[in-house]
Image 1 (tube, rainbow, N blue to C red):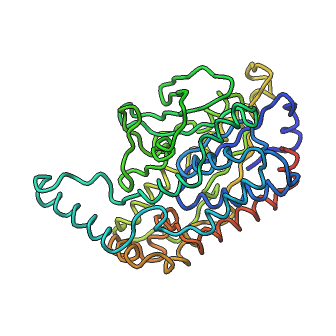
Image 2: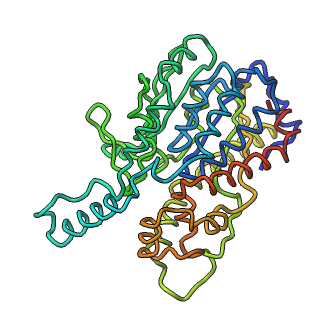
Length: 382
């Protein structure tokens, strides 16, 4: 899904700041890394980051923060980003050793059978402390603030879901302060971005624990993100590069009609697919419709339409993940089999959790190939 060159050229580039919108998707974020790597190779080797506004959710927030911290040299930042993602292991994201998995399972069991009397209910199924430690080593918030102060980027936004409010909260940092916003479905709040904002944005419900920020608990930003492009436009972007992690038309073996009851793993995979993957496509389609109406003279505009450019995978990730299931730690494979994740039946859930290099490298290569297949469109857009 994309616009023609004529549609893209309707907005003068010098007056149309470029925004980057990165959706969530767990291990699927490796695809976004591949797309960004391709874009960096379409630009001069020493070119700065081409995006004035960077907005991310969940895994996309982590990628966006890493890019913002290396704004002076986009290709160098993409190289560092690729090195992290292509060498991933599950143990860098959550504890998957035997003792940790047994402790988590025993805690959950005792809480269930005792009604919470023996031990309190678990905060989450998995312990993602390793992810916090990984981000502490690689995300430099001081350099992000320097990039903002120097004008290398205009804004960085990280979205999380407030369990108190039941809506999306976008925390943003900007050199020239933008007024915070509030809608029925979202709120924008200026903030001194820190590690907790990233951890909150990536706190997948049930799997990872909520994160407290100023006394309020937050979870994964994709949960109630009705308009994922809104923050970027409010922060000044008028051209949006949107990188999704789900094909526009998804057809998988696990989606075929079956007579058997779906397993817990299939239901969890369906839930994550719904949380992470639908809204960017819908929001882009809404903008496309608005531009069509404006061209037809059916609506009045302010002379600065928002033009999106969407890149999505050409292949289904579930099929790729099922080929790499054996690369997961044995304890996690046992857990997934217990939940009913057996190859194709659990491929969707697996595609979000498979933080292993064999899988992420294949997704990086796919993202790179998909972007290069549209290099002429991308160059015109950039």
